[in-house]
Length: 146
Image 1 (cartoon, rainbow, N blue to C red):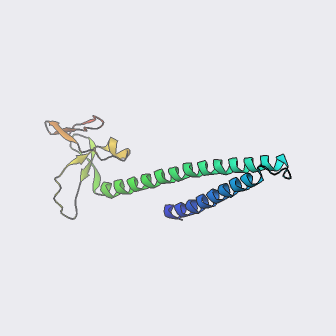
Image 2: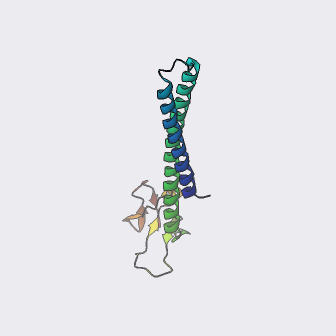
Image 3: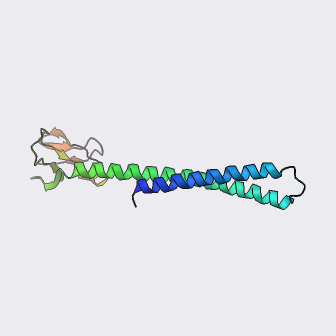
């Protein structure tokens, strides 16, 4: 089951919880002034409505968590698509960096990406600092290509 299927199930559950809460409130209102209904029944109805309200809150939290997971999955897919265009290389000075390569010949200039940031699922393009060496603008790691 994918995340969209989970959203559908949660939406169905929300509708059911909401309907049950409304029905419980209506029943409680209907028996409010009726002396034939024991106080214990009214108390149980209030507890049921409270439990359904708590379920609604839990549902909202679950829905938020699934939304965050969906965003995280989308971010990972975006990173993986971009990262697939890099390969790990060892430069002459011994530094190991990710080098951009484009088998499709698009017009992206040659460059390197920081391996430290890459491990954190970030693509940070190294910037020249002189003598052919480069530095990551994000984590500030320097790479010597000497």
